Length: 209
Image 1 (cartoon, rainbow, N blue to C red):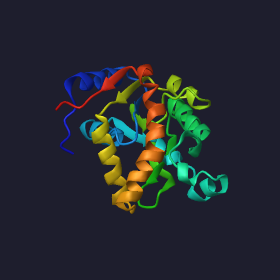
Image 2: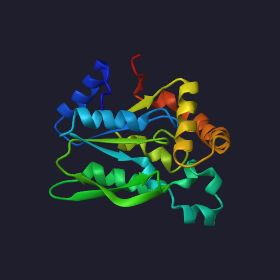
Image 3: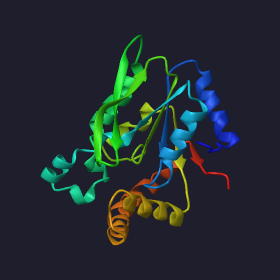
């Protein structure tokens, strides 16, 4: 991928791997912070040891969001299957033998989760989970951090993050105005909730420039 991981964070990964047991690393941050980019960079560098599992696979289906009247708030904490995500983390912590744990992915072109898309093998020592609400204090999200061995808060300048988000929304079909409105009225309220919990992370991750 051509993305360089700073030495400080490489050393933390090596310590997690040196334990000899299944470990789960959480990458958390506001929308557009670069969590997925970091997760994929880690998986590329330690390709035999890391499996990425995104929280976004637990988005409620669009038909369910419509039934609940939450479609315009997609991405807010109550638009995910939080209990399902927690149940998956518990399975990943106790996975043994020849059990394969299947996790969902999120397909942006469909704007839907895809069940059973990620096969996690019991022999994979480090699972990298990335998502917005790994540190949220609200129930049931408050259960998540205890299921992680380490949490990194991915930090990025706000103007860069918002620019990425606007571009992403346009890439997947929104007009420039619709993308800007969605960032302002949906993504940013969620970002403020996420930022408020940042001090609970073990470390801050900042790209070297």
